Length: 115
Image (cartoon, rainbow, N blue to C red; front, side, top):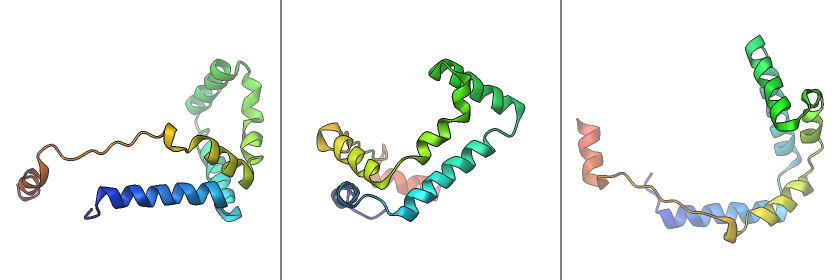
């Protein structure tokens, strides 16, 4: 709040460029992998969640056995993989910028916060 949209767009573009050139740190990558693993473990604690996962692998992967090896593919991702993918896909031609403003503008915002 209080930052011009143009400035936000500049900052986002700078971060994308940094990702394309430098990638992420080893620590950032390991943290993401740890979070994914924890999420998968936590997401399979109930029988219902397990059946949903099995259905997902049957439907989208045509093989429920992949549930046992899918995490391995994510663990193989490297910093260079992230840089390569960022260079390929995070390019201006693939971007869509949406700027959403409150319907009533500043006056409407003031009414909402004081009501």
